[in-house]
Image (tube, rainbow, N blue to C red; front, side, top):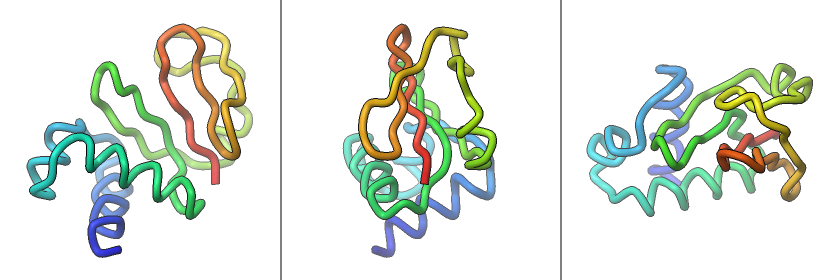
Length: 98
C-alpha cells in the first residue's frame, strides 16, 4: 500500500516519468512498477497512460482520456481492452481510465 501511494504521488507530481527512473527511485524492479500500476488501475485511482515499449508513464486528466479516439503516441486506433483499460493496437500504449 505504501509503494502504491509513493508511485501515484511521483507520477501525479511529475506528469511523466520513465519506468527505470521510477524503479530506481522506489528501489524496486521494473516488473514491480508494472504490477503496482495495474493495482492502482484496479483500485480506479490512476488516470493516465503507459508506453511500455518506451518505458514511460504519463499522468492525465481522466476527462481528457475519455474523449480520446486516437493514440497520443502514434496516432493509431485505440480499443477497449478491459475495464478501464484502452490499448493502442499499433504501438501497445495502454490508457487507464478510473
